[in-house]
Image 1 (cartoon, rainbow, N blue to C red):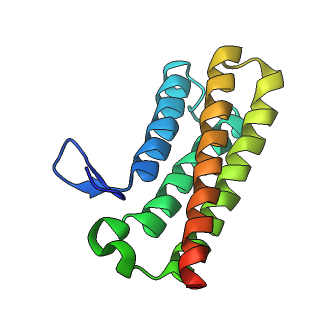
Image 2 (image 1 turned 180 degrees about the horizontal axis):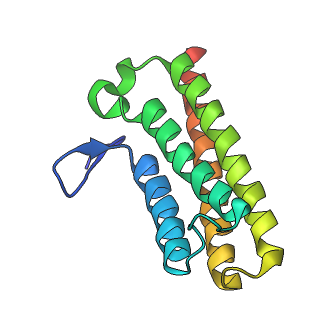
Length: 138
């Protein structure tokens, strides 16, 4: 729709990267829940993987959803700082994927898809940081 926003099914608007991260986190959550990995005695690394992915989505929403309303008027320094925080959680999610993988709790292809999605989101976060830093210097 716009450069920095897309509508959701409820009529709200969000940054596309926030939507992508939320979709990845919820896909992870639903798969793990269906396999019974999120119960009280579930695997701590699986729970960390989900938590870190969900937190990444929340941090991205904090950084980017204001662009839906403010566009270029948004504070680029604020955006960079929040994107750095989001990267911290994304890196923790990736580390958790690496800890979960050898446990054979999830299908290998699912973990590979999660990792690929998280890496692609990381690339896009870095591109947004670069774009925002460019606005800081202009």
